[in-house]
Image (cartoon, rainbow, N blue to C red; front, side, top):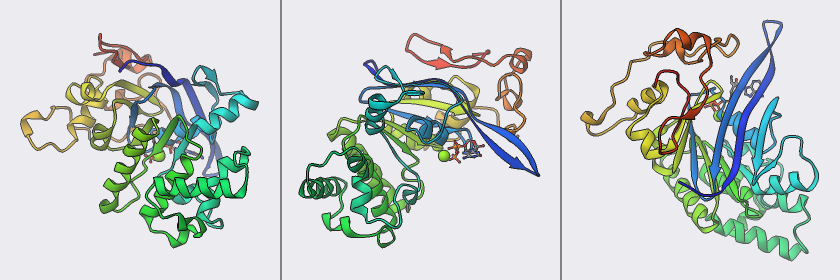
Length: 321
Ligand SMILES: Nc1ncnc2c1ncn2[C@@H]1O[C@H](COP(=O)(O)OP(=O)(O)OP(=O)(O)O)[C@@H](O)[C@H]1O
Ligand SMILES: [Mg+2]
């Protein structure tokens, strides 16, 4: 997919200080991740639990503080930015959380949560204008405007996530970061909420980052995919390219794990019996080497960089493909 890059993340590093058995450790949650989002596309980020997906999303919207790297929105670097640039970015790049409770204040009515970004930025000229904007936004996500005066506990899980989405689209942003937005919902409402997000994306011309641990879901809705492993992106390419011909050994194992109706289409990959290495004791070279069926000596010493691997714009971080 070609077009203007709306969001660009370069060499992002984010660490957390944690206490364990009375000692302080640093957890390197994101360890040099790079990715870009083209205007109008859905970029999927996929990877197993703990690989740093949420931390990347939270860094982009300013909820986690990066140690280093660059996060650019339409060319302007946000790390260290202030004033008008930062304000514009915060309004233009919004997040939908896995757990809608995380974004809805239990003590505030839905209308106040939905209007919060507009309130902070003095967007509404009058109370009537504010109420009209809340009502229109609730309607857009399939909720009756009367939900404005209800509290989060009065809503079902699906309704709460709709309210969480409403909160992210007033005022209309350029980019929505959706962090496992349907994982916490009943299977019966997952498809409805997913369809709503896809409809809104089209109507509001949003670009989207869609985070999931499920490559099957990502495959259905993303134009491109970034595969993440232990804090780094190991492969980024068009969704079909990745699903039909994964190159990185980790991507190959993810693709092989997707249930497919036709067994002849399954990609044979090494069965992984081992656990990923600990975030507290990171290996020196490629973080995947210990589980990798094609690792060589070099993989134990050098971290492979994300580099173009084909004419089609695919990027891969592996010494051996
Ligand atoms: N606030 C925090 N304090 C300490 N450690 C954290 C914090 N947030 C994340 N981590 C750690 O950073 C690493 C990456 O976490 P993150 O939540 O970004 O992963 P994830 O890919 O979103 O996982 P999941 O699929 O389970 O949501 C994990 O080891 C996690 O324990
Ligand atoms: Mg997460």
